[in-house]
Image (cartoon, rainbow, N blue to C red; front, side, top):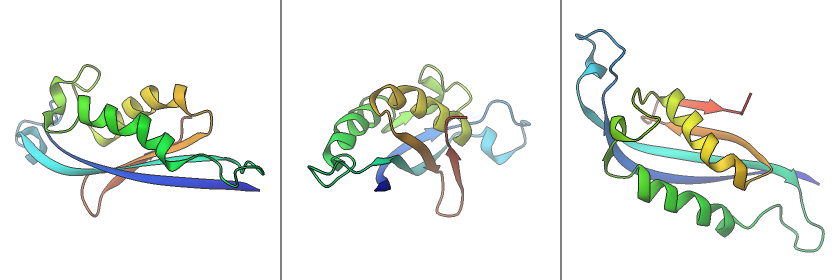
Length: 121
């Protein structure tokens, strides 16, 4: 059986977008309550009955979020100097993909109505 698992995480961070016009609202420093979805796809192990333990996903994702993103100014994080949702998706993908052979998507919810998804292509 092929399955998709999604685990959600949250963090608070500030950012500003340095590549937009100076009068754009996102040029000013502001914050978000970011939500991140990590999706893993693959075959269910017939012995365990699951694709991957949600705890294994959390063991890789939460330390990364807490150590490098939570309550930070994202512009100060190496690789996120222009911290768009798109850049954050790619940044998370590059750090998580080596740990999850079945990583299939990273979704960043910047607001309750705006999100970005990266599928590694």
